[in-house]
Structures are given as structure tokens and as C-alpha cells.
Amino acid sequence: MGQQASRQSDTSSQTIHDADTLISTSGSSNEELGNDADRVVEEESKAEDQDEMEWVQETSRSLLEACESDDWDTFEKFLSDESIPKRKKKLVLKEEEECRNEALRWGAPLAVIKYLIDIEGSDAISSGECSWLHTALMCRDTTFEVVKLLVDIGGKDLVMMQSNHPEHRRRTALHIHLGGCVCCPKPAELKLQIMEFLLRVGGMELLEIEDEDGYRVVDYCLEHERKVIVKCLESSYEENFDPVQKHVRSLQSVKVTPKQIEYWIWQSDYVKLKNFLDNEEESEESKQRCFNYRDSQRNGVAFLAFCLFHGPRSIAERIIDLMGTEFLMTTDNNGNTCLHEACACNCNDENIERRHELIDFLIEHGGPALLSLSNEFGETALHQLLRCNRVNFDSITLMADVGGKDFLLKSCSDGYTVLHSASMKEEPNKDVLLYLISVGGFDLRKVKDRNGKKAEDYWSPELKEYIDLCTKPTPALPALSDDLQCPICFEIMNDVHIIPHCCHRFCKMCITDAFQRNKKCPVCRAEYTIGEVRRDLLLCRFALLVQDKENELKKANEKNDALLEEKKDELTKAKEEIATLKRKYNQM
Picture 1 (cartoon, rainbow, N blue to C red):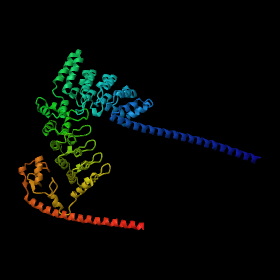
Picture 2 (picture 1 turned 90 degrees about the vertical axis):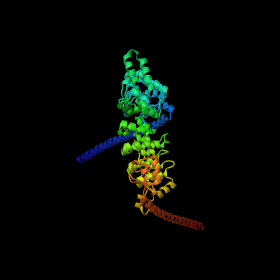
Picture 3 (picture 1 turned 135 degrees about the horizontal axis):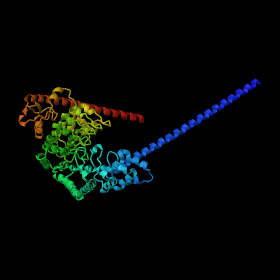
Picture 4 (picture 1 turned 180 degrees about the vertical axis):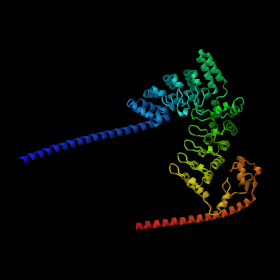
């Protein structure tokens, strides 16, 4: 009986244990099922987020393309699509460097601006580093209706607002409107209409605001624009007669504004520019202030435009005497220096002699420090010069000689050296390529760009064969041959002539031609006269001997090359015969 009770007790305990185990297992399973469900939901959410992000990026890119091609119908269609939530539209507008800002920069029409305000809210107009009005007035195509809409919403505070964007240098919208680059002006009537409207809203206080560099609105005006300000003041503030007259007298006393200097340079009116520099009534400080002014488009000083149009060296000398050599290091938003601008391709490429004179002056005063500066794309001035259609060869040799091998080995952000730049032209100049290689050495030929290509990979087979032949080292007399090489034509000197002052030697014809272009030694830049140049009789004899020896070696090499080609032809024929025999054998 006791044993039976004990067995029943054990059975009961086992049953309870099994039940607990079952409950525990069931609970664990439910928990795992719950975790699995959470994971599924999380993965689905991630997938949805990923899909949404891809849609946002793709839509932003298509809208940017629409901006650049003035396809505002596509832009408006997206903004007006009620099936797309505002949240998603905001994501799209902030993607790709803020799509909304790009729309403003490209002159979006009134309908698009209204949709943007509806989506982002009226407060967005003046939020951030700069206002929508600042951005819109950077574009020449922005209409008066767009400006009026933004000002009607933002009021006087918007007109008086100074931008905190680093490139805007604490300018108001009117500063930016008037300070646009002269090369791409707004339509004259529209420009004056917007100017007068902003003045009437901002009042005399707007004229008092200085930008980061201490320039007021009047400094951004040409003469006829100053007259508009005077007219606007006189017609709008009759009750404040005395303060208005004070401003009017101040405006009328201004003879030359910084903007006027920039305008003369863009018009190549060097007579007026010279007269301004010669005017003793203008203080040195006033003149310096004019040349330190930066336009609101690229933040470039007027001297950059002067160099872009290859202004006369005589005036460049006057400007640098006034401003000092440190002024040569001034850059624009893209990091371009005056030397970059002088070397850039433009419509003035035909005047290569004046360009060379200017480049020579800039390097003479700026030295290696100026030459070595790269812009934000990693390009040196020589990168830009080598892309031009017509270039004075002396400009290239000057920059390469001053910069040296390390300078030539510099690569831009795409990995291109100057040898790449010279090689990628439609018809590369053989002499330029040979000269760059003579200074940069074979290390220059080894450099690969971002695509893994060396400069010679852009050459035609014929060009590569020519360069290889010209740069092939000779097996005999290398040191003596190098000593007798003309620094201009890179051949063994013919009729050797020497400049006694610096002891540099050249072919007679080479140094005579060089003197016609520039009265400085092609090697060390020392000044000399053609009458000082003398024939070096001893080296003339040595040069003739070396030339004879090199001619013998060249003939021997040509003979060896011919024999090698003959053997190659025999080998090719033998291979063809073997292939024919194999084919016949297989057919048997």
C-alpha cells in the first residue's frame, strides 16, 4: 500500500514536471515567435526606408536635370502632385545639395516658387545661412514677380538681412544683385526695376549697410545706377529732406567706384584704367580699395579679370606696384589665381604674345610660390595653359623651368599631370611633349590618372613611336652629348653661340629667334643684348665631332632596326607556313 502510494506520488510529480516543461517550452516558443515577428517588421521597415531613399535620390537627380535644362514644367508637376506627401517632397528638395536652392539659382518661375513656399512654409524664406532672396538674385533669369513675392512675405527684414553664407561675405540681397559678374549681366531694365524696388523697401538704412569687406551698396554701382539711387531717394523721402540731401551729395561726390574699375577691365578700356591709376587726386588708399573689391558671383578681384583678358604688362606693373606682390596670391571661390586666369582658355587666345608677356611678369614677381598654387580641382596654371589651342612655347618652358620636375609631377583631382593635359588634345604638340619629358624625366611618363592610364596611353601609335625614338638614350658619349645639347631645340648645338654674362650656350639660329620674342636668357632669364652674343669656337669643333659620331651611331641603329624588322618578317612568314601545314594535316 505504501509502495503504491509512493509510485502514485512519483507519477504525479513527473506529470507536474512534464506540465511545467511543456508550459516553459510553450512560453519560450511564443517569445521566439514574437522576436521573429519583430525582426520581420524591422527588416520590412528597413526595406521600405531603402526604397524610399532610392526614390528620393532618383527624383532629386531628375529635378536637378530639369533645373539645368529650364524644364520647369517637370519641376512644377512634381510639386503639384497631391499623391506625394509633403514629407517626401521635403526630402527630395533637401537632397543633392538642396534641390530647392538649385531651383532658385537657376531662376525658377513664380509658379514653382509658390509651390516651394507652400511645401516648406514662409519661415523657410529667411532661415538658414542665407535667404531665398539672396539665392534668387544670384541668377540673371530671376523675374521681378519672384522678387516681389519673396519681399512681400519677408518684408523689410528680408531686404535688410545680411547673408551668413561664407561666399556671400555678409552681403545684403541688393549687394548681390548689383555685384553680379559683368560678363553675364541681368537685362538692364529688370536690373534697375529690382534695384529701385529693394531701395524703396529698405530705405536709407539699406545704403548704410557694409559687407564683410567694408563695401556699401554704392560701391557696387556703375554711374547710371548711382543716378537711379539719387532719383529714388529724392522722390521717396521728401519729408526727410536733410538726411536725403546728405546721401545725395555723398553719392554725387563719388567719381569712380570699385564696380566701375571692374567694368572698365571687362570692356578692355585700358585708357580709362590707366588714367585712374595716374590720377594724383585719387589717394593711394582709395585706389587700393577699388582693386580689393570682389564681385558677388565668384568673389574674384578685378585683377583676375584683367589677367583673363591678358591686359597690358605695363598696367599690370602699375597695379602690383600699388597693391604689393602678396596681391598676386589672391584667389576666387574656386581657388584660381591671377596666373590661372592668364593661362585659361578664352576668346583672347589669338594674342599669345601679350599673354606670354603677362605670364612672364606674374612669374617674375610671384615666383615659385605663385606657380605652385593649385585650384580646388588640383590644377596648376600650367594644366590650364596646355589645354589652350594656341600657346607661346616660351610660356611653357618658363613655367616648367621655374617649377622643375616636382611641379610637373603634380596631379589634379582626376589624376592628370601636365603631360596628360598636353597629350589629351586633339592634335598633341610633339615639341611640347618632348620638352615636358626632358624636364620631368621618365617618372612623368609613369604617372597614371584616375582611370589607370598613363599620358602615353592617349597618344596615337605613330606619336608614341616618334616620342620613343626621340627619347631613346644613346649608348655612347651620353655625358658629352648632354653638355652639347641646345636648351631650346634639344639637339646637339649647331654653330654654338654663348651669352657671356651668364655663360649659357645655344645654336646661333635658336638664340637669334628667341631674342626676337624675349630679350632674356631662355635658361636663367638674365637680360642681354644680341650684340653681346659671341661664337664659341672650341665648342663648335666639339659639337661637330659629336654630331658626326651620333650620326654614325644613328645609322648603325637604323641598320640594326632594319635587320630586326627583316628577321621579324621571316618569323611571321614561318608561322604562317606552319599554320598552313597544320590546317592541311587536319583536313587529311
